[in-house]
Amino acid sequence: MAETDAVTGNSVTASVAAGAAGGNASVDAMLVGFVAAAGAEIDRLFRAAMEACARSGGAALRDRYGAGYGELLIDFRSVLAAPDGIVTAAELAEVMRYHDQAEIEVSIRRAEGRGAVIRDDHGQIRATPTGHAFFDDLYATQADALNSLWADADEPLARLTAITGEIVVAASLNPLLPVGAFTAMTPNYEPVGTPASVLLLNRLSALRYHRSDAHAIAWRSAGLSATEMVAIQESSGSQRDAIEARTNEIAAAPFRILAENRRAAFLADLRSMPVPD
Image (cartoon, rainbow, N blue to C red; front, side):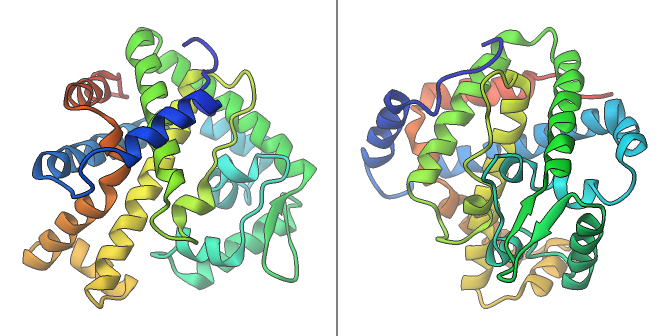
């Protein structure tokens, strides 16, 4: 898959819907174990890819645009880059559920002050033409960095791009939260010609937000606040382990579309992708 794929086409969506709806609806232990392993590998590869992008082109982007872009626009790139992309106040709160609200407001006002975004009276945020120009530059910068990093990984890149697309579609058919981080950040903006490397980066990001929603459901069901969950996450113990286990169960549904042989291959491909030294 050199440039784009057809994951968003009707035929793929139909096959994903059939897979997501079929089989035993209960979550089995093997699936939960796979979801735990996949979640860790998805997070590891996404973080490594973003680090590679920052190392390769981050300084040049800052030189071209100055302060006030990276904090907000990079986080919300996959939705605000769309011509009609918006983020509502409720969606923003879910995506940034672990962050200090005052710091978020400072970041938004900085981006507004630089003319990168506008915010209406309802708190909805959208990119300006200046912001969209930044997104075009960002996507190209990320493509250059990742195409170099993954130059010798064409086959696993193609498989991962396709499979992550299938899982994202499956997750979108029945999102865990009606207004959550996943619904805020999807569908990903994937214009024709987007390289497979950038498609994969943003699909990994979407799957991390799916898991983030599962995690939020788990700790909220345990009667915890975001602040309390951060403190628990930074320690170890039975409560943290129980929430992580419940997170894997809640996050499992869209991964059911992968048969057991595809699960092993998916993990192997994730682990095979080059990462920065």
